[in-house]
Length: 178
Picture 1 (cartoon, one colour):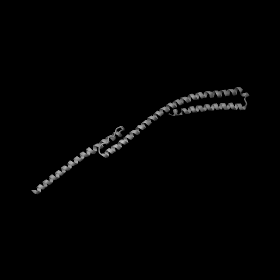
Picture 2 (spheres, rainbow, N blue to C red):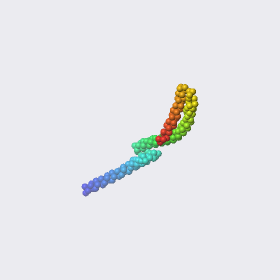
Picture 3 (cartoon, one colour):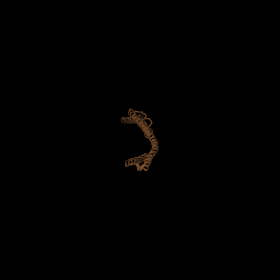
Picture 4 (cartoon, helix red, strand yellow):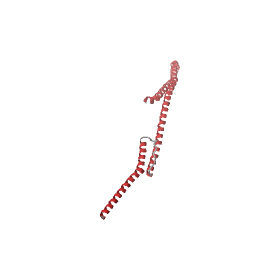
C-alpha cells in the first residue's frame, strides 16, 4: 500500500512537473512572440515596403534594444538613400534643362551662322568681282606687280568664301548627325 501510494505521488509529481514545463514553454513562446517576433515582423514589413520602392516610408523602432538599434540603422540608411535619390533626380532634371537650353542655343547659333555667312559672302563676292573688273578694264595699263596684287585679293576673297562655307557646314554637323 505504501509502495502504491508513493508510486501515485510520484506520478502526480511528474505530471505536475510536466504541466509546469508545458505551461512555462507556452509562456516563453507567448513572451517570445510578443516581445521579439512581432517587432521583427514589423521591421521586416517596413524594410519590404522600402525595398519595393516606397523610399518615403519610415522605419519604426520598437521592441527590444537590439531590434530598436537595427531599426534605427535601417532608418538612417533609408533617409540617406532617399536624400541621394532626390539629389540624383534633381541632377537629372538639371541635365535635361541644360540639354534643352543647349538645343535652343545651338538652333540660334545655326541661324546666326547662316545669316552671318550670307552677309559675309556678299562683300567678298563684290571684292572679287570688282578686282576682276579692274584687271579686265585696266589690264593693259597694269604692270605684273599690280596683276599679282589683284590675283592675291581675288584668291583671298575666294579662300574666305570657302572658309565661311566650311564653317557653315561645320555648324550643321551636329544637327545632321542626330
